[in-house]
Amino acid sequence: MSIAPGKLSDPVVGAFVAAVNAHDRDAFGALLTPDAAMADDGSERDLHDWVDREIFSANGHMDVHSESDGGRALVVDYRNDTWGEMRTAWRFTVSPDNRISRFETGQA
Image (tube, rainbow, N blue to C red; front, side, top):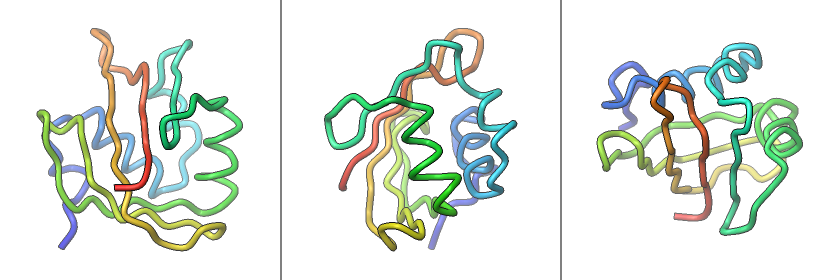
């Protein structure tokens, strides 16, 4: 049973999940700080390259399995056309202006 994006405890993280699932690149970009950063499996990645390759070009989709840390830590069944489906963990840092300054993802 997945948690709908609008039901997540942190509305900014919920909007991130909704933007990914809607393949809405503009809404996704508006959620990030100008200097946003990310890591995948503990390695720093180029955010824009990674997002294009792993989310938007590959039809990424997040089914949230559980949340913790006030909604800023998620366990997600993530799927895309490149890798299929896998259980992943996501952690988000939300800035004071309610935008995401960093996210980290990796195998859960």
